[in-house]
Length: 180
Image (cartoon, rainbow, N blue to C red; front, side, top):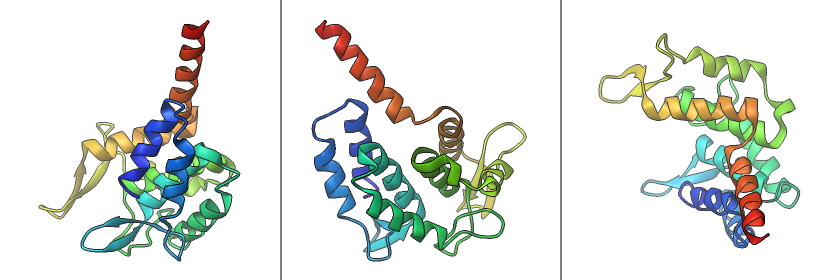
């Protein structure tokens, strides 16, 4: 699912007729606990992948995939911590995962998003505007370009809506204009 979700995002962005096929496949990849997984010598439940899939299935067809999405949200909520972070893995909250979860909430049900969860993400912003992530070599939190991009997308989605929905709407209007 951590790779297939990007195919679904791309199909949604261009209003492909294959969205339903990809979404149905992706929904079928849920684990029994509602999580979605990545493969690293086996299937590992992952908060970020789960959140990406929630966002993608919401965009594909929120009503059709509501049972899968709600079970995935229940999984994520099981890892919600008092500091506002989401962490089912036990490694501690981080800005990457937090960004993904906030995007899922912003697209599915912005009103259900916890203010403390937004505050947690913002607490990871550094003075230069970037966001921090753990550097596995040094064992320290430091500026990270990928994390910064994810955080920017999360905060942008929270404020302006989904970039995927906007891309699909633009593409649909472009094709309509070219056909006319």
